Amino acid sequence: MIIRFTISTFFLFASVSLAIGQIEPLAFTYGDPGITERGIKVVEDEAGNFLFVGDRYVILDTSGAQPANVDLEYFKISPHGEVIWSGYMDSTLLDGGISVLAEAGGGYTLLTKHCDNVLGGAGCTRQNPRLYRLDGDGNILWQTTYYSGDIALAANFVKTPDGGYAIMGVTSKYSELGDLFLLKVDANGAEVWEAIVPATGGRAFDVAPASGGGYYIAGSSIETNGRTGLVSKISESGEVLWTQYYGKASFNGKLLSPFGDGFGLMLTNIPTDFISKELMRMDADGGLIWEKDLVDDIDRPTSAVATEDGVVVTGLDEIVSADDKVAKVVKYDLNGNLVWTKTHDPYPDYYEHPTDIISTASGFVIAGFTELADTVIYVYPEDLMLFLIDQNGDLDSLETPNSVTETGVLPTVLVYPNPATDFVVFQLSGNQGEEYELLIFNTLGQVCKNRRFSGSAFRLDRDGLPNGLYSFEIRSLKNEMIAKGKLILE
Image (tube, rainbow, N blue to C red):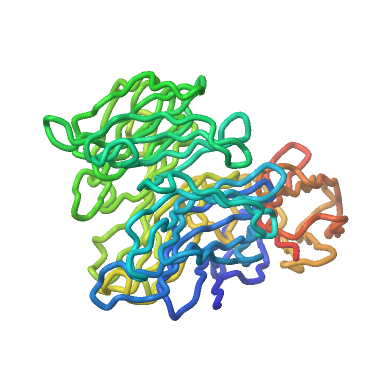
């Protein structure tokens, strides 16, 4: 397995002018160069590590059809991009990743697709949802398969208040045309209740917790006016409270909850390319507040995450050229107004295909896969990709020019060694004997160390801080920002 990452040692110079030097983005790819691998979902745990799930296509099909042998693949990744451990599930001819949740106290739960019936040793005629519970080292604690004997495709799952899970999908158990389901299971994977929303040719999109309790599920059904997007509200005990239809042709979708006082829905309404054209904001009862055409701002929206003051959408920008599609990130406020747009090309030899975005304490993590230009799907080698951006949508990095207060003559700051093992030195030039405060933060934004110092240099001993990526700030005792940056302990 080849792991490529773009981290380098950095020295931070912060002063009234910007530092000059190369910026190394926090952008990484993972996987085997000989096979096609596609990143799907990522989650951040309590320690700031990430678990990244995807698919590995073991048998390639030169016709361009999806190959018959697919494995679920996963990587546990440190805050600064290094693989801690990885693995894959190969229980049948067709396994694959759908979603992942981090568990309190360590460990992860994976929602996957599983082939329940193999046809002639080459194909799958019946797929089912499966949960895998992993400990913090990647060992399987238990696994459970649902809807065995029937066809069921899961779309996503969420944690429930009692420590269990709510799995959303579509099943032919009750109708060959396919009904939407929400399956509640306990913390050990045992079934508790099932809610069914009848549909015709149903498609399952997403599930999200509802403010005040219960769940929203999103999908679509073929009604009298054609395929129509819908959202249902399910109570905490599994009762279907209401279903709203939105009159939009819908083939894929993403729920955003909470989104202000209600929820949001990003819908795909072209069946041939699965571009998410529409973003809608609803109130808590499903009433439409506004809708926006996303393609005005981003060519191929693929995923979104709600924030306290709006929503951040990621996807592809295809305007560059047919051979060099790049990642794009767009932010809207709660009224649907455009706040900023950013385009990123961290892998110049490939084009970027985001599939997921999550919020972190310092910004956002974008996950997906890289693609070679003008290639047939499922044939050519592709790798999982992960890159970090800050709150303004800019690529995060280990070497960042830092601006400081606009008045006065401030000291420049040299930080070394970085990465550090036992200690790190913060050296200030131009210090006239002033006293400063140094703060060290973990990836959750929590203060790990707080020290005052004066003089031209200060040595900070590690004192048991675990390996990982940290940020620091140096402030005057008047709370003026002197410098800030990133620090790696290994």
